[in-house]
Image (cartoon, rainbow over all chains, first blue to last red; front, side, top):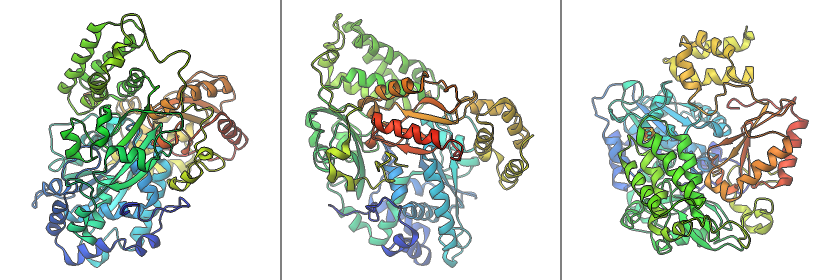
Length: 460
Length: 166
Ligand code: SF4
Ligand code: FES
């Protein structure tokens, strides 16, 4: 196994690491070092030099984002830690919080120190209520230990963190929408203001994903060179959490060198395909990325390499599809999700996504012809004119479908309908028979996230 | 009338914050848990305690999927319909649950115990097909597991406390 930085304290018994566990492995040493020996600018420089980029999907250089907070900016300043994570296929942040809550907390505090913030808000989705409770408990522990609250470790830096429970809706993952949600407004995105100037309550706010912030403590502890050396590709920077789901033998979340090849993630870490399944394609970074062609299995999973291949890394959440899964149907499922989750603010998104879904349903039913495929392409292209990144993201699987699987789409046309329906198509992942634990006893140790799949089938 | 304790808990929550807006969702959650859903009466209390208008609250209540303006069962079964669960035949899971409980998606069993709802990806995709009940994640579901879970919830319905987010 390659070096585990974020999952260093991942335990076989699924229990989240305690403060003592975390401290034993050097936890909070980064913070101690920062407040005692480093200026906020030193911290920003270190993070900037490390090459760390936002792990929530956008890939923006983290240190640069922090440097946007002006030195003379007003107080209070805020850190928004994004744990919304609602995109299908994505579950790394849930596992990370459950593995090592203090790692995440230290990351937020360090970010707070770097931009001299006063408050942190941990934004967490409602289906992670158990995680919200865990964090509330561990925040108390951190406060008690002097890592949080007034005059942290005897310095003149004071910073505290609140947990904010969301009430659901994927758009809350978008940073400005999230700020609106916290401020009790309807969470539409707001592209007119820069969060680092005018975010929460009109004050400077830095928004980062959980995984991004959790990468910071080890950078401070071990240095920039070390961090860079962890990656498998020149711009992979550090390690990356890849979550793998779908028709693979051992789905789960794996910490691997940043820039690990897509194929190695699927056929190495995730144990290859389920018995009876054959690889067809995957969504490499969650449902707002494109289906890939087979040759993309060679592509390193980092922001730059993926971009060069015409793909995007997204959240690094690989959803794997079997040869017998109809990709038109899969895309309909994905668009149903996006149509439901659209905030409805702008027309291309509100009208366009249901329209794409409608066209695909006609294709699926055999009621469409070539002209409909061309129309689908046009509507998908039009999504780039929407107000925020949600709609272009929703169009990505459609682009992937049309770019790499147009033949499969065509098989549906001219009255034929879905070629995957009917006899002879055996699905490997039938839910009535799928007992992964029985099929793969050695995979069990990997499920260190919140104790899934115990005897009661409960994994909370 | 709200129970005194709840009234005080919410009042303290509102008093101890710089921005009451930040607490609106928490207030709604507390009232929703008390009333079983975010009823008109609950809405009235929320408006009174936060100083917001009912229209402002309605604007939020109708946007979010964990706020319920209609009555629902004691246990809400949130079934994931994300693509990983779909691939593992989430359809069959809905089917099975609905047949077993004698309801359609969105309906509540006559005994008031269960409501089945579709839900956005639960962040449990590696354990597909997955569902969430009362804050508890269940994955790698099979018909046998579903039976056991329903049985357990039914048997302990009186003693299991409801989680905040329902
Ligand atoms: S693109 Fe969609 S989510 Fe974004 S503002 Fe428009 S309607 Fe809302
Ligand atoms: S797709 Fe079902 S839990 Fe993520």
